[in-house]
Image 1 (cartoon, one colour):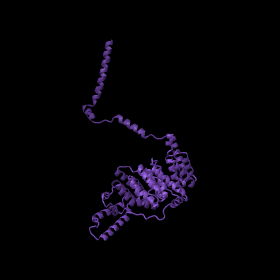
Image 2 (cartoon, rainbow, N blue to C red):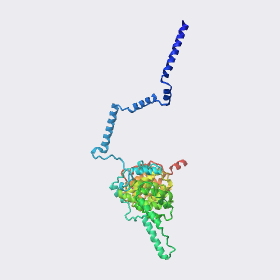
Image 3 (tube, rainbow, N blue to C red):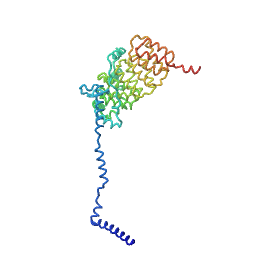
Image 4 (cartoon, one colour):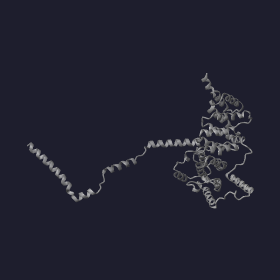
Length: 445
């Protein structure tokens, strides 16, 4: 019986498997072939779409959104209370302003700056490098002007120098009365080309500079050719491109003439007219510091020697010095020259910027700065705050590099030139510091 029962079960299973195959074949061979060639939509894709839809439908809870809105309102109320934005004026808050020129003359749109960045391949630091708007007090300006020269010489530009050369050539020709000594005249086509370049630079905002202008530094008579382009009519963006080209292709002496005759007058005129410096001209100053010797001889030292440098000009050019890395030997030579000049308020600003760089200065430069301050032992004028600030900065940085005799002389200076808040700090720094030769003497003992 048991054997027969197992046969019955096996037969039943066989019949069940047979029924499944027969059911599968009910559709026919043609339908199976067609189904195998057509793509079927799998259920896995449906599940993925459903999950993606669930993520998109997520939202912030009501309690959390209410807290976010409350915090946003509190921050807005604090800003309005602090900056006075809720007075109904409708003006946006501005905590800092970039010192740029007039937007209608030398302004640069966002699209133009982006295109310039793409062409150069370097990110423009316009959004990163900015300094606060300078607010100069009228009393400070009046005190600053007391130390400026009243009979300053007239500033010379590139046009003045070229006209002097022309007059010298004329007198030379008239004296010798010879055609051989006459200077060769410039080709008419060349004059036409560079005058056209000048017209382009007078409207330049961004993009590529004319190729003919890039050849100017390689010419022997580059000053005459540059005069044809009328540099006084260039835009600020064109001045920046010209500074880049001349710094890269001229030697230090020729770059010095470009800085002195073209760049410096343009910067001083821009500051005098707009009470601030255009961004492109500020970047031109930074680019000019790639040749430090030319920058100091062509811009900084002539500005100090003229004794006509205003407070705004000194602060702006001083900020360029403080932001840029300068080799110690060039800075030492500049400090030595400034310390030996006749005093003006700009000298104190530039000396303070160099002292804040914390160079390891040679003793000759430190002695020159000490004698620069000791020169005012017999001066009966009320010195500006800038002078006292530069003295405090020098004492804080180099109090252990001066000799004991110089320290005693500076303490005596503090009795003659007194400031209510700064002089006491200068005296304290001098008293509680070592002198230049004290460590060597203690080692010998």
